[in-house]
View 1: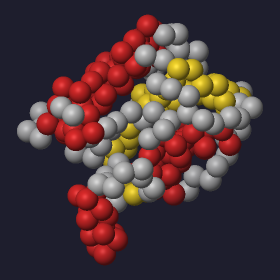
View 2: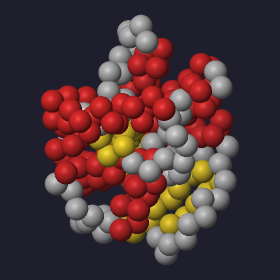
View 3: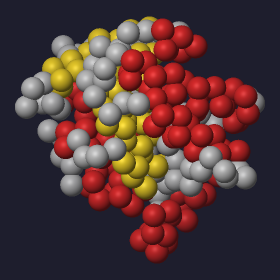
View 4: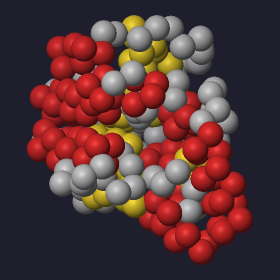
Length: 218
């Protein structure tokens, strides 16, 4: 397989940090470009970090076959619904449009379980609207990943998520697709999907678990 270039936006988040490691270790990629607000403090022969203005993502040249978007925040961290929408909707959509314009082959984006543009819940509605706009951007291979509650090492404690994870540990498989999922499984599934390039699709959490669970670093 021809070694490709990957562009990753959101490399310092929970999923993005695992994904960056997998991309750097993968033989699929000869080069991994990260767009970030500031230097991420990592060095690797394959890695190039570019400091960018996220408000101008669609003005930048995308020089990669595969574009990975792991951007996401919470309303509490963002400070307002408007700021949340900017991070979880506007930035991914701008990135997808730039990827389509510049000929990227695959666009892989993290959304959330329950995303629906007609949802009454603001969070789910924004995620659903993002998915629709990303698909409309027109990258030939567009892949959407909808994990449930994420587990993994976080910088900040979130009480609601901590309680949810404790319940998830107790109930486990009884929760079905709502069972918490480790962030590295999501990262693994994204790399696997990019390698095999199925038709454009969306993957709910239980499908991510199946795909990521059989995905060693390649």
